[in-house]
Image (cartoon, rainbow, N blue to C red):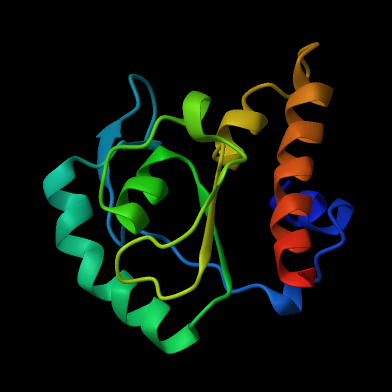
Length: 140
């Protein structure tokens, strides 16, 4: 779904660096079966992984950072992020990010959970619009 959204936003996957802001995940066992379900990382886990993220950002030196979800937003910005309040807004001058523009959007899993439901089209289109906005930041 992310690949489709990037393509619809006019972004070539070869021009994107994808990484996880948090490098490890807590899991719970599904009530039935062997499937493990990721749990949201806590603040200590986010902070513990920040040096790796900072090193990646320092190496890649992106002009635009798109945070997919509140956890990524918190990791990149170093503060709590509310998707409903900050989605689609461009944040400049974040500490330690030089001149990179940061854009917060929903996590793709939130869109995927709507597949097959009436809200799917609107959610996917909104996600694509956020990615297109990030692309436009590169154009000037």
